[in-house]
Length: 401
Image (cartoon, rainbow, N blue to C red; front, side, top):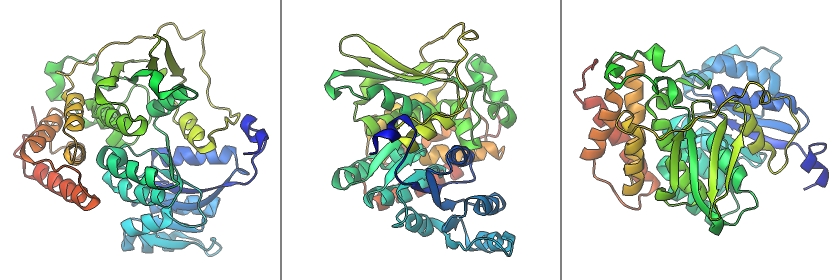
């Protein structure tokens, strides 16, 4: 790499970017980063599931060569929204369209921000095609971590974390020997209900659960933060990203969300990465790596930072975290079952068909009733995902607690 690019003053060629999930929270923040560096990015692909109105606006601004939408009906709606002077763009549809777009020869970097299980296949294909993948989709490694690890070992693909916690660990590990690492410490905000009495959880509304105290995120991940399933998924993701046994991955609740995660080392030293709760910082680092490009992101105000608090999570109050540890220990299809059951249960909660406490209950029941298959193929994972969702839909859970 051009040495000047290390200090952010030059870059030989624009990075040709495929942004999977362009209209969601991470996608829109990624495009904010791209706007800061218009000469360093060439946006080749933008995708969305259903928000074709926002996608049409993005196409007008960034002029990609290709877009992907969730269905033929959405593709028709998207094309009707484009004005007569819109740039020529190829329109692909559905999961196969995502895989084709992620492996295009004119793409160098794929940012995977498709929500949920749907993000696995295109990310896996991108890794197999030798792309550099900036991963913002937890479920890819939660469900298919072994398959992605095999693809990385077999080819030239590369995986860089976008989640703030995993980006923090990645930065703390820079220049360190694997043998010197003792523990990874993932920090958690605790969500909106950390201090709320457990006996009132049956009264939690969707609006309350979506009101995160620190982060602005999509609905599904915000509910996961409220149940702490989000942190459980991150534990599984960390195992595959950093090849660390589960008993060396800790979670600490840190309500200020300033310390994004830590690494403890064999000599007793601990490294931490600090910053304001702003996803644009880890997004930019994953896209600019190994350089750090100067940017006007918000800085920590040391005069305002009076304290940093940490405590152990309450697993009785937030059982989703323990369920994730258990699924990781079980291995095979267990994490896929966990993830699918959780996605289905969260969807039911958002639709007000299920109470807040029913989310972990549903996940636990499905995990108990579905057999775990060791060494699954991608098809096995798809089947486990489908069956787990079906089981949640059939559970006779009450709408209140």
